Length: 576
Figure 1 (cartoon, rainbow, N blue to C red):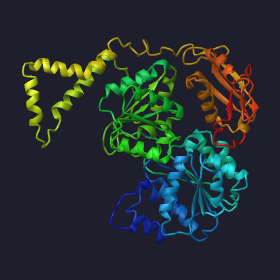
Figure 2: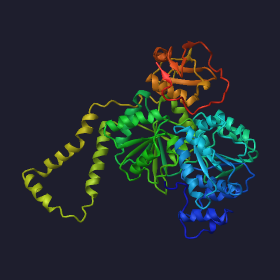
Figure 3: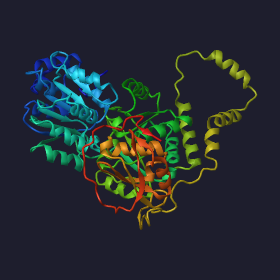
Figure 4: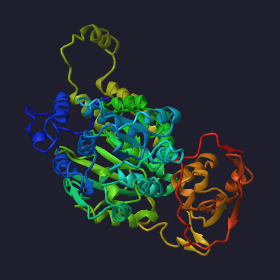
């Protein structure tokens, strides 16, 4: 695996030495061909190697955050490498493995400093055996680490340094209670190093609860979008979102983009639908193995794929410098995450576009996002069929006019071609070429309807009615009681995924989820209430009968928070 921590090759190594890193680490880094630290590394490494200060470090993907905490982490273990001293928490298995691989590169000159990865989806017994070899550093996903703590297989009593990598994503995935539980089990912790791309309120709460007067370090302008990125949003009804996405892609035939979705299920669904319709696209999500991820990224980087569809978590670590577009198929919950997404285009002085699909109800969120940008997002119109066809033709014409001929001898192919077409006029020939190239577009978009709402505020009035909120389709939202909770291994994200996977509903059919110890209250579009009850009521999960019923519990009542004990429900635990 290639290192992804963003060091810039140079011809000398004095810069790293001046940061206070041990000679063995400098040698390992130099062997990899990197000697000049990135800005976030210059700012954080001297602070972290002191070992006595809590740190909050903010930097975007591709800036070298892994080396910024990884090199100091290895150095802090050198004095007593047989004792566990550093714990690194990451939100996903893929990131866990990526961090572990990088740390092992850093320890190439320090064989006594062992690194162990613990994560879900792999043999827990093998990981327990590896923990018995007394690693100096553990890199872990929260759910699997808690399983190991509860089994007494992972003892964190000697941990002095805790790293929370991608802290914003861990909180977005519902790991707040897990982080609390893990930090409570590190009594000897001397300092906490929190690394994040954004700084939402939930991350500040973690900082306030578990850190003492932390030093805040930021590499580059915080929460500010690049001036060379154009921001544009399109208002569509929920039912038209997929069709609108296709039109935006078709209207930009030279597009090279990442499309962001909220959930793994959504990324896979959209990717499969686009692949069936002939688009060069693949999905990137947490269920892929590292080999599958490397294959997808290899195809994307060499442009065999025009589009990559991903969740925010899966896209962490991607560093592609020449993206033309970022598309928000679904807006993120936090405005700061929007700027993080959009910052993947418009790099290295190039221009880029960030396009967002929003429903009428979501327009207020665009105003919140605008406060973080250097320019106000423009409202665009979803292109119609003739506009798309004309844009495709213009692109095709430009490709023909500028196509390099090369040094090959084409005469053997041209002679029979001229002979076959000798009686065809130039006008007829061009017409046939256009027909071959654009017949599909012209047929598909011949009677295409206008996807733009007839008025700017269509669908926004009357969103509140007695008994709950309206869903995207206009129906009322009601509350449903489900007899599953954190004791069954659920957190909010996994409960949502559980409901979607087994009911066939879309995320827009569900509202707020209040997760308790032994029960969950979920808002459901009234039109789908019976389907949810029929699907789950009377079924079994891990041998326990599920009870589902409509409830009159008032909105606003919040459940008590309890620690989750698993990253997700076990596959095969649900029976109907």
